[in-house]
Image (cartoon, rainbow, N blue to C red):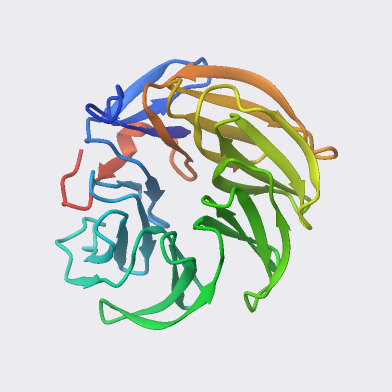
Length: 288
């Protein structure tokens, strides 16, 4: 099952959170205002959507952590037993532009695009405690660990960078324009969406360029890999394009494109077979 978030007026012409069907039909699941990112609960049939003030969120234990890009803050919401988020009971400030949250090895890592760092924190008793930071030049936006390597899109410098497990730089691929999201396929390939030229770059794990191919629309804001399928969300052209990836070459074959006005992100769901089993929940505790 594939979901997509969509920017609603005035930011876009979308309707909220939708399901994208394999036959290219689209069904509205929740009329939330401009959900720019979605995240699935690891155990419950719940998908969390950002509110208009937030750009990213992640479930960390029994809490939902959200990033506010313009305000420069990160909020911690407690989750009830049924997964419903309560009002934030802790706010960590000191960011310029926090953009992504990732829980890993007992820490909560947060990219700060405005300060060129990945901030290290620990969530204890509902509060984020700063532990330090890793320097990532070039405006770190989104990041992902594949094997023993961290891959980071550097929006301001138009690059994707690779770091080892101790966050020491090991490789960098420049020449991009406004890279948005990074994803991996198997243990061989990395995919980076690049807004402006509207392409997806295919790279090896040591960041050698294999190919660039048209993303299928305008302004690829987000992408995701699910099995051998690659989904790309296009904000400006308002569609979601699906590709089949070749396991040997890493290259795509375009399958279809669905009209999704204001597409901001895609989320392939696991463990959910029917939308009647699913709740879409915003951090303000509104459930649909």
